[in-house]
Image 1 (cartoon, protein in one colour):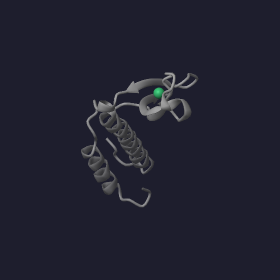
Image 2 (image 1 turned 180 degrees about the vertical axis):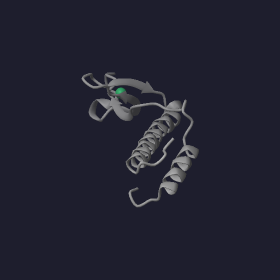
Image 3 (image 1 turned 45 degrees about the vertical axis):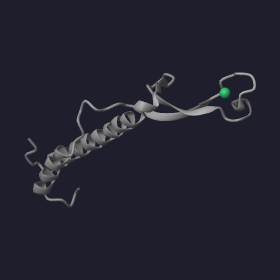
Length: 111
Ligand SMILES: [Zn+2]
């Protein structure tokens, strides 16, 4: 970024805005897989790793246990997409902030 011209930085900033995923299609957390034993006598899962995989959305907050929400298979693809969108948006936010800080350092217009 340091070797990019200020004009290129502004151009990059505009390009980043153009590639944003839709802001309402985001979710924070991560998908985890769990295999559960059902406890029914004689079920094959008693001697195996359990039924599954079942998917859960795990959302961490500092100082708390992660919150786990069951994700039905029908929603799995959409939840994956929302999580990826969140990461993309966060990357873009960070990069735009870095560009603006760099422009500030150069005593350039960034507004
Ligand atoms: Zn079972």
